[in-house]
Image (cartoon, rainbow, N blue to C red; front, side, top):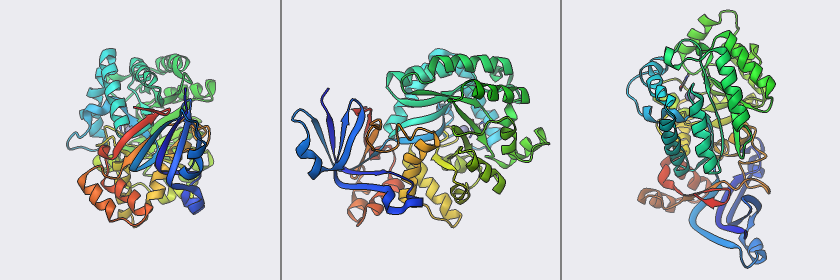
Length: 428
Ligand code: GUN
Ligand code: ZN
């Protein structure tokens, strides 16, 4: 197949801009992204690259927009679409009242198939090309998700929830059952095309010690799978964990005791942690998913970005649908900015775009495959539209710099700001 080339303003990160400053950022006012067989072969100035393109290259010119890597959602629940925007409660009550009854429906494979399709369409419409995704306790929910993701050639990570206590009977498995069902799913899906598996105990309160041990056994038997769970999201939840595991120093120590912290471990929320916890996450090369929309919507708390940064913890952004009330990573960045404002701290538009792209890829240990436009990366990218709405159009015309334009897109943008989403170089 012929090369394809995308001309326009391009922005991506080679490294962490907080640590490395301007040298981390590649910004091309008039650039070209050249793609062959779904992978980036070149990214550089149009004036330099265009004269060397073969005659049969397919050239697209994206004017009045910004080409950036596809967004990465590092924590989201596909079966919770129908509880988005549910009124009134905080985490533990929200789970009982809204979430568990909705997840029950995923025993039905056909329903799971329908929701998986809808969910992926929404992600792509919002410019999200990779996600770390919770299924339900039903293995067929994960089959449905991976089947839909594979059809669309997506790079996705998913796992079956392991949950054997403190949940309705209809959503519980057992330690043995969760082990065998997870194992079968790993054998069927892990590393199939662009898919990866994550061992996924819901959170410490809903797994017995026997089940956490089974999760650990799975990581030992399959050392290259991911690990995904919730951590220290809500004060009541933290008190509950302290009472269920009285001998552990902290919530994180429960997971640590079962050897669940590693390079491919992602802990969603991670709000109520102390210095020792942060140091331990950093030391293990693990990551956290910052979920600002959900943390505000279900009233959980204000994430300590500064503590995460200074402990060298990988940081990704998560919508945490259905705790979060939008699929949009731009909206997520908007809320992340406001949370830092409330903490009297700063979040630059470059840093937040980094968390949404290369930082997210590092959080998922996928930086060799996705997250920027270095040669050989999979060509998942989006074109942001500087004229997406009359307001954005007006506001962009009054910007002087890239930083201002990027910030306006993040603060005023949502799915309407995503002009196109490309998967492996093909427009979705
Ligand atoms: N903690 C345990 N389960 C959940 C869930 O489904 N959503 C959120 N936000 N937190 C959780
Ligand atoms: Zn969650």
